[in-house]
Image (cartoon, rainbow, N blue to C red; front, side):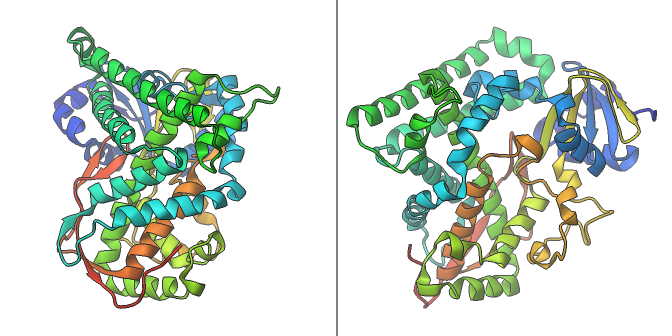
Length: 447
């Protein structure tokens, strides 16, 4: 067995302020110096194994996934804020709900949501002021937020309750980040009442969701939204979810469903604004849509549009780390992963792996359209991999294609920014993306 290269607790403490602000440069320095897999010692969580090795990532997430489970970062720390839904659960509990919910995200059900999704996109994009420079990160957050909210609760009046829910989710994410990056201060967060305050906010979020469920049930009206699909979903024995479980699933679908999409859209539009040739080619592609309609079969033809999104997620994957815990001792890539080892897989580093990607740190919008084979699937995991792959990956993909196609069809997009400063939180965010939109003379896309 090879010995794992070590990063001492002293080096972690010396760089603690940098790690709190943005841990990626610290990890990159260690990868560059120590290789694709190394071990860090911390005061709060003990030893952590970091890896960008394609073999390690594939083995942990796919081939030997039964030897690993999600870590307490999700099953305990995150779950205490958002509940025990698909994202945060494990074992039989997770399997039962995955089997129940996954069919609701099949393409046949997604088709019924496309109209709802597009209407939400069109409504939110009306706030764009042509020729005025604006930070579109907030706008993309509003767009993705409204798409998820309307897809979950289409027939209800949701603007006010969903805005409250969004605020709670964002505030509690900041608290969780502090717990994760400053584990040595967890005692203070608890003693000062900060954690209790965040937990009270989460209970308020549950009350909001419960009220929306009650409104739908009392109305006795059917809709094609996800809430109706989940209300009708049953376990293998024919029983339905408890109210508590339904709230957990809705909370997680909402929280995870809008932020990652907003991040990816913001980065994508920045790169499109920087590359006028790419933008012109995307415009030509979306202009060929028959009758200016956006339907699933039309979206599937927009290969360059999707490639431009995939390339942005390669450079800036929304879920830039994936965590797992070894439930038994296992050998991978010549290293021994002891039982209970916490493994952090860096998708940010893997997506820039110099031994595979040509010009790994450069944005090439047609990169995924130009691939003649699928070898990149060993190096590209924007939605995770294996049985725990994001259940909403198709939903998010079609949503992002619709947003990019709609904007490029209607506007020529420019920017004065040279690069985007990142803000690694639970997901990988941009700090701001300042763009200008110049109206085209051709008609906009209609649903």
